[in-house]
Image 1 (cartoon, one colour):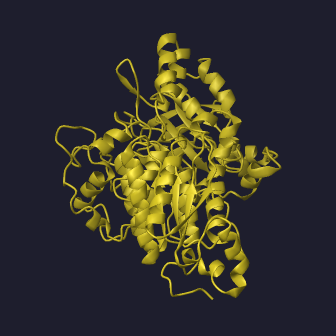
Image 2 (cartoon, rainbow, N blue to C red):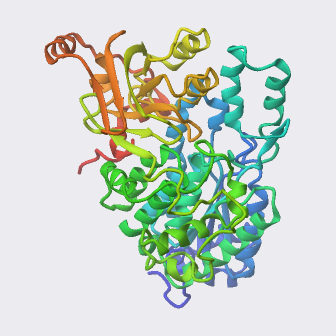
Image 3 (tube, rainbow, N blue to C red):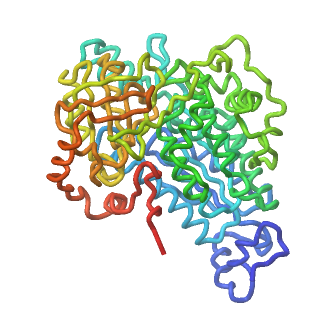
Length: 567
């Protein structure tokens, strides 16, 4: 039986206490443990460090700081690795299909170590996009005391007086091939877009998820917009480890913090900051892991309530470090709280409520800045992540409507069954104003893995077609994407969704005002096409992608792997 005499060790005592656990203790002794250590909590540190990507290459120093802080606070740190892939490096290639699958792998790794080793709590340190939702899914599955540590953002690059992000490089491809950019500038952007370690710098998916995790109370206040190279990120990680030790000793668990109200807080911040479309997919997955009643329609409900008042890339001008400089997510949350758009009574990992954490935050940001705008003079009067429905997406699709003068288009379909052929057509100037590009068989099952489409959308922007060409897909978009684009179309082509029956030249309507995604073809024609449709054979029959394609739920339910398990 677990030893109840030592607070915070209820789980680890399963493997450290009693005569029968002598072999277990022998293995701990092999790693330098002393008898007195078995009275202290076993604290997992899920370390996402790798030299695969700059997003994660600066995490080891954070892990080291966490180890030291846990030891000093009377815990036993147990480090273990979690994998990642680089979305930016795999983008536009077959490797990008592993990106969403990695979310599940990360979650499984953390759950496996935390539960298999009876850890008393876990600090999750992550960088690239899927580290955040994967870590949070595991945290909710295990429900042990936990704190999430975001590895930090990259600093902006610079070329000829302009701030750069990784999206600058993707858009430069379109500009260069269109003859709108010199070789000198193309090379300069490539070499200067990513000057430091840290995750992509705009309000792209990594920063969207880190800010949302802070907003729902699972990260320390003001920790989500720090730059990875800065000492304050190291110091914040140590503070996070100390906060975790308090959570362990007070038995404050994720289920005490992550509720429907705290999810609403997170989504309010996503809307206010102009966050990534991927947040829809990931919060459906997190709420599924947490067993919280949340659907795709809840995003539309929140969109109507919360304006976009942060002027951040890709829809605005500034990057995460700029937001941090003028008050960060606490400032955004304080303004939302004062406007009645935030639940102040939600608990957080500090042991205090949201309102208590925000008590000393100014009501308004500094006057001499335009990163955070007044609520009564926002960038957009309503949120930017719209859920479109219609015959093409009866389950819903996600459109990012910020940055557009008129998010409405009706035009002829240009149909592609893979990303690479679409990219070739764009770069060869075969896509013209008024077209609606259809990228299909790229959903959770059909891709498999639901890859992101930053390469084609970035190329369209670079070609000057962001406002005049529509693009729909059953795949995903990068957080850096903007334009007349609609993703997560569900049901996807591979399972017989209408997007798979579109033919070249068909009329398609995207109308964000009416929340409509429509194929303008009569029902008799659609029925005839459906009768002739044959489901393609799976692209992968072994390994991770085969498993993902077989098990993944529809995008409208988060593309999770355990949604259809029934016992």
